[in-house]
Length: 308
Ligand SMILES: [Zn+2]
Image 1: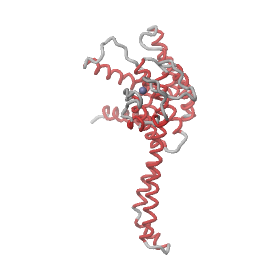
Image 2: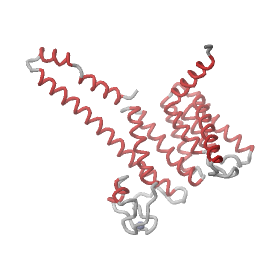
Image 3: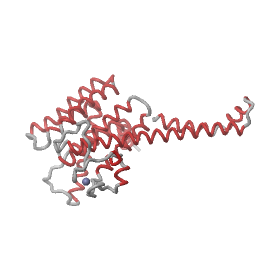
Image 4: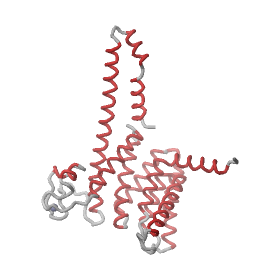
């Protein structure tokens, strides 16, 4: 459980320790009111500090999201995205953006989603990615607290978000992202579960092999070669057992979405949809919640199978 949740609960409990206040008042020469003041002050400071941590995590995440926006915009257009010293500019009028136009979320809201110079509408994708990354970072922080796992989880999400958006919009999985993601997945997988290294290595081989077989048999018609790379990253990150869970979730959700889209005539039967986003969302879900999902499923089977 989250360390911050525990601390919040602990501070709430210490608030209620009236007996302790009374005994503290007895053992010191202070009155109960003064002890209460001390308690309230301490609790107030703890609550403010926790709120501050959450705000800092959100700002940090939104700033990473701002960088991910640059990656999402430039990679599919084959523009260099890591050119230091190059200032960002408006895609329409090419005017260089000032620092005050580059504050995540705030600048977008302040300018009403328009360029300061040419007043053209800026895609809502910018503020969406910044907010979602910020919220993800806050959620991960509440989940993990100040642990080194925090950085590993930030890294995984920071690769998954641009891969999801780029594949959904352009139907490509850029090597510049997917290849480093495989390395990050292997490192994170081994760091988080050093004793399960066999499962992790096996997961990478199974994940890549599963998609390579489909790619090979269909000569690249069913899936793209990018899915092979995603399969390897998924396996390394999750280990082979949780990889199977993630694949199941991806195919289930992909099927459900396809059926809904067909029912409402949103797509034609033959139109291709990128499968990468399903794989990556399923990977994130399995990465954080594999055990609760498996427990829930086993409980369900137990209830169904057990005689009444
Ligand atoms: Zn402009």
